[in-house]
Image 1 (cartoon, one colour):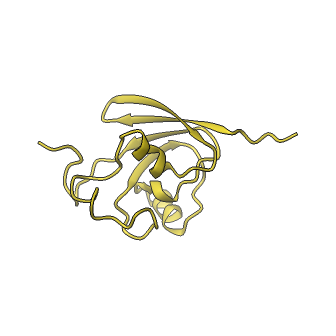
Image 2 (cartoon, rainbow, N blue to C red):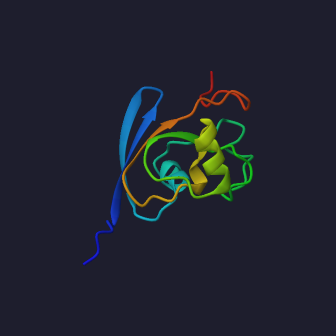
Length: 111
């Protein structure tokens, strides 16, 4: 008997508005967020990004509870307190995330 779950819960804080998502275990956080209409990107980086390959660092989110970092960039970000790359977070259990405020690439929401 396996203790692996087939569905995980993703709690997302989007600037004070909370969303509860369900996702298949093994999905990437970036894909789950985008499928739910909750972009980890800004207006500019929504079109100018690496497509989830872990190269551009524009899909950063704050993970309050969830999986330990596996990708080298994720491990460094976690160690130094920077946002983790949602494209490199594989969902193997429930997670709580905050969509990070983007300073360098502009605000996430149009003004």
